[in-house]
Image 1: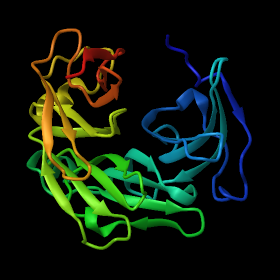
Image 2: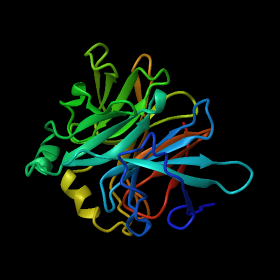
Image 3: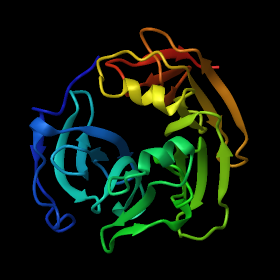
Length: 279
């Protein structure tokens, strides 16, 4: 079942030591969630990071209480994006840090043209409690950085390139060691670890113009074709596990979760998820 937690069901308790620069709680009436990243490490409770596009461009931080009863969220702080950055994905890192992608530069008038042409645009930032934001230069060549996933050891990042239809593996220390580009064949959107240990990338197989034509109306059920790619995080071998033509009631899949014997698919252009048998 679906349960709405925000707006209306949030507690507020700002961690003023860790998030001293946060100007205060977000405006629930303007809350616009985008990327999600969950840190469910050894220290409870889990931390949920949410890219937010409402009255500010930020990563909002919550703790998550989940158990037999209904889950609850407590807002503990925020980190404002640097000026000119349009956020997208976020992934938790060790030590209370996180990586957040910059899909486009809002101060770049040619940003959308670069995305459509598959040219470098956007970037990837890493935030640490002690030092704040730092740019990961290895992501500079990616076109429209989108979904982000951290390797289990926290030493590498996988980043989705929407414009150039890629998944890029980067070293978190900023070196070029191990940097690898995987061509997906579709506008790569989000990345998620599956219950089987593989990394799953999802995205639409269509022109940027067709995808943008559907974006303004989120109640519309876009029918764009889409794919899901399974990636072995060690060998980087890939296998396309979903190649779907799209349908009137669901298309343009942006996220694929492998949960047991099923794929749960999300779309940014509608009010539903799709569930398919895994293969």
